[in-house]
Length: 75
Image 1: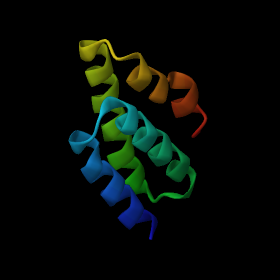
Image 2: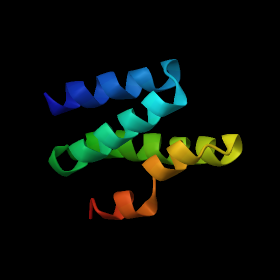
Image 3: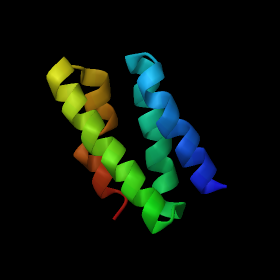
């Protein structure tokens, strides 16, 4: 069930506005503690891509969504 949720959220990322993108990233982050290793890898790749996009687009909402505090809270 978690894999399905991860997959659906990841598929929606490129098709939504920046504000919704940030909410999706937050939702993905909340699924990390209960995700499998392969799901974690997928989510982490999304976080890396999103953080790069946020820098290139100078998008503060995305930057906040993928903050290091949120990433390190997984560990």
